Image (cartoon, rainbow, N blue to C red; front, side, top):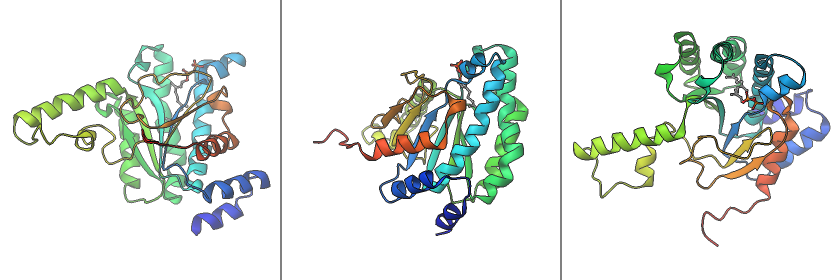
Length: 258
Ligand code: FPP
């Protein structure tokens, strides 16, 4: 109800967007949407700007899309913000990407709290610079009792490493008798992944025209619907998320059945 009132009052939505939002909410909304936010560098290059300008612009889009996801009643929004492979980028770019969570949360945490958003993270937190880790932990602590959208940042995340580590811990638990190998099944194994407690994504979006997974949630995306767009992440608007969900709502998911 609260969400509905907010939606009606939100003057930032054109009447067309508002109608689409209402129509989407009247059907099954994907519970977990995951996004590979790609194309920041190309967006900057097209404007003869440094790559970090693209990341900065991309951060503003994160705010817009988070608000909309919350309004739509999506339960979890996972955003691929930094992969374990991204450390290979030039130092100034890595440094800037590591400052972005601080910048984003420094500015928007009060707004996220106000909107009942819960911040989470998947990825190797211990290997993040201290300042990045602190800002994420602060946001996670301050929003842990919120019950609205889960805004889940994949930060220093890599899926193969995640799976391998889960296998190692499973083997350890089997050897020590905590787990019976004959009882091990997909659900139990999922509890060893960083996404423990989160549903698998229903919809994956990747921007910028690249059609690949780039080591993102390989286990969790087994039955996910994919939607790709040529739009570069800094140009991604509310209407694009609505389009992706409308396409999703017109797909038939069979999960291997008929
Ligand atoms: C990929 O584009 C994008 C990233 C590696 C970083 C994504 C980060 C953001 C959108 C901001 C995140 C915001 C917060 C709040 C953490 P690219 O640089 O690979 O683009 P390119 O393929 O055009 O070079």
